[in-house]
Amino acid sequence: MHFKILRKKPRTTTFAGLIFTLALALALTAVPILVVAGGAQEADRALFWSLHKDGKQVGYVLGTIHSEDPRVLDFSAGFLQKLGNNTVFAMELVPDFPTLARLTETMHYPPGKTLEAVIGPDRFKALVNALSGYRVPLEFIRRMKPWAAMMTLSTPPPQTGFFMDLSLSLRASGSGLRVIGLETLEQQLSFLEQMPMPMQLKLLDQAIAKFDQVKAVHEQMVNAYLDNDLWILQSLSDEQMQAVDVKTRDYFIESGIHARNLRMMKTLLPYFTDNAVFVAVGALHLPGDRGLLNSLRHEGFSLKPLGLPFIQDHQD
Image (cartoon, rainbow, N blue to C red):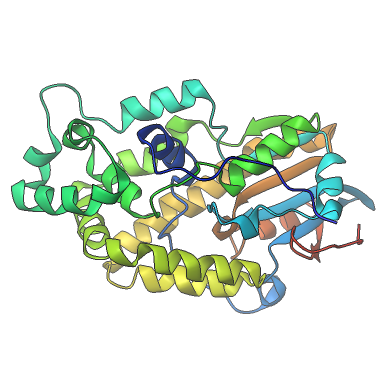
């Protein structure tokens, strides 16, 4: 038996929905992670894990995918029971209204400075054309920062605004769990805000050039996710970054993944003192020597792979 959330028929993308999408999608797209062979990495292909310490179960870790696809929202009864057995739900960023307001402000240039002046009229014209399916007001585009425009184009236009990350947080809150963010918006945006402008422009150019491929790539990612294979997700992500120079890729890996993993672990660990914690973060934060799975092992946790949330699984 599966529990489903009843919702209205998807509508056309709205501007508010786009802002909400960005809040949930930050740094989760087009970020490569290098596959490291050997040791625990050989087995780290699963997306859902139970956490144990000192012989006791202390929570779960789920790698999520930023998608509205109904297939990733159809949670099994067994999974929802596991979710409800915790006291804290930890996600990368809690997309509350104050956060969304700060996001809108941060992704804009201040009055008097325009995106067209920064990126040039030809690139700006191409960007406006690429964003035509997102229903973003032209005045909003005029004041966007390059990284914000790039992030917008890195995911398909939102239809419902009801993404896996949001669905899980609402399920957790409805089950009485305390929902916490492992980062603040300012922390999460820092690596984008501090990215050198030449890097931002290269990534924006790539996003503009490939905007018509985003839906197909996203479908590939969802299918790989449903196959419960983290390595395939990594491979697809790596493919999307092949057109980017090594310096830019290294910046993303170090600042967008490794530094954020360290910060999220530092925030997360104290919650295990008195709570059972369900951790839900973007799947590409899990693997690698400096990924969250290995970091948890270094802190004395043992991990056991489980079936996906959409599969009845009676393991602990």
